[in-house]
Length: 139
Image 1: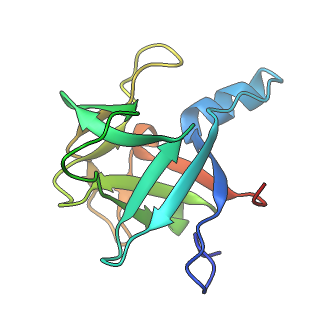
Image 2 (image 1 turned 90 degrees about the vertical axis):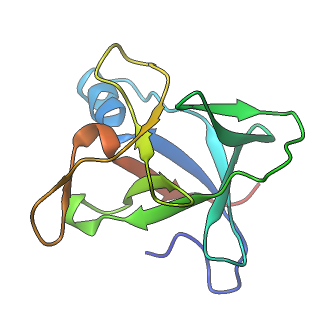
Image 3 (image 1 turned 135 degrees about the horizontal axis):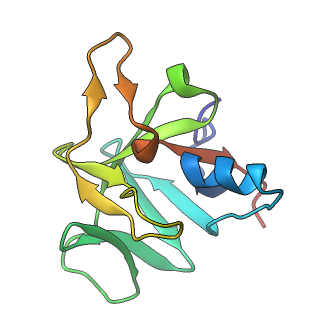
């Protein structure tokens, strides 16, 4: 299933870290991390917003900022169907690093660091590097 429709309109989505999503389901909860807006840029990369704030990297962590920035943060969102439907990795625009949830406690700040890909085809990504993105109807 494509992330965006063929007309290029971005959809609101729910984005979950796959490990958190599974933990919430095992505990009978429905924990989610908010509604994100993902917009496809002309260069094939994406911007990600939550609550009107842009997701950007500050000191190797992901933050949502409301401040005007000199440079628009760009992310590469890559489907990983080998890990299941709606599962993606999210990388910096230059693909030098990606989103990773450190193995600490639930609700830990998302880090930005090099992704670890297993030597297989297709590559295997760690659970802490995989995110589930599910399109929902626009409001």
